[in-house]
Image (cartoon, rainbow, N blue to C red; front, side, top):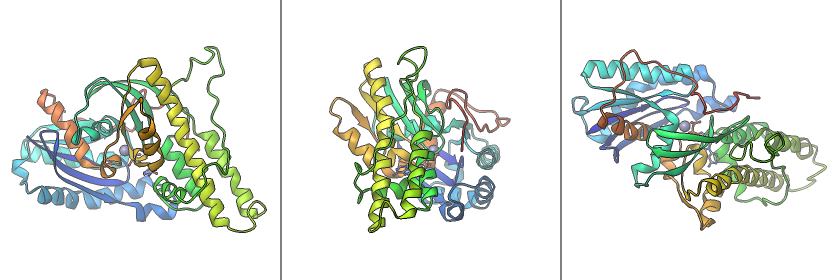
Length: 349
Ligand code: KG4
Ligand code: ZN
């Protein structure tokens, strides 16, 4: 069965064709970075406008590349939650019209479950496993018992991991998207040059039991941004300020990853599950990947880099499993910006 997957939840306008949930025939990703870069972050109105302009061409390209005619598609899967509402609505409306015109099933897909599915496009992993979902909007540690059966153990209490990378990069005027840039410049930095604080989440009534799998990034983000004064005043770095910036980036990145790993290792210890499947844009981070590669007691599966960020293939891939089970979404299905339980607090600053 060939499924067309459409993804427009944030700033990637993406479509892919996948056969039988596994065989990626095409995966077209039209990134909008250049339009958001002047603002150092995604501007929702620009994102939805670009999706509106691009979606038709992106879908056509995905079909052409897959050498598949519209009439040969068995179903259309589309991200309908969570994400930017205006952006989601472009993909959902397009998919509805396409499915209706072709008389084929429509399947509305959860974006984070699709990120968790991305690694299955190239390797089969037996359930249960732990999921490490790290993107620009979410940070989730969960137990996965099936492609759509996930129990959330921990989330972020404030910023998502990718959001922290993006905001630090924004304050240092490094460009957008920040995660990729910080990852790149950190390679030339000394990650022990600065000591940033690990969040202390264990105060409280349960004495350490509460928040064992949660993370928090606002403290690290603010501590890192506060270094900016020192960085700019040049007192701290009379010469070689470039090296200093790389050191700050590397030290920030190391702490950001250690925050994630502390919560993940707690989950491994408490559940006894040692297989971890990562997904989401931050899963592309080279320091995170190398840290988990070194961890011999944990088997961590990362999607290839092109499947970490938002893409249509992961939507088509998970869509196949819904379709095989007989699930369909009605044409009345709508988009939803949030998913209950995926984020503890919607705090953004
Ligand atoms: O999954 P994704 O493409 O979109 C959302 O669902 O949010 O994730 C985007 C996030 C951005 O915050 C971006 O900075 C981050 O992933 N990111 C990275 C890396 N590549 C992308 N963060 C750290 N290191 C990277 N190499
Ligand atoms: Zn995503």
